[in-house]
Length: 111
Image (cartoon, rainbow, N blue to C red):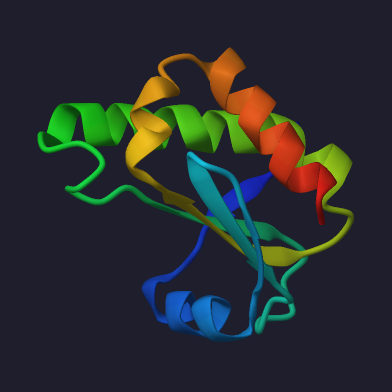
């Protein structure tokens, strides 16, 4: 398990514009080289209202995705990086960390 920090709000636009994009039916993963010289992996998770109407399921999905990414990032991302996980409509099927792990493994293996 590696140290994963939160991606600051100002870095989202840069990752959207310059990042590599890998997609799945449930998630889109964007990764970019960090702008700051810190040796951290920084992650931003985006789950919109179209995915889950109420705040409780949206926040639960964010927690599951962050925890899954934390466990998998060290093995698949070698150095510092800025990452964004963008949930799509079918992401509501990711109710457990095991399901999120399977999807994230597929996405990270495509990098």
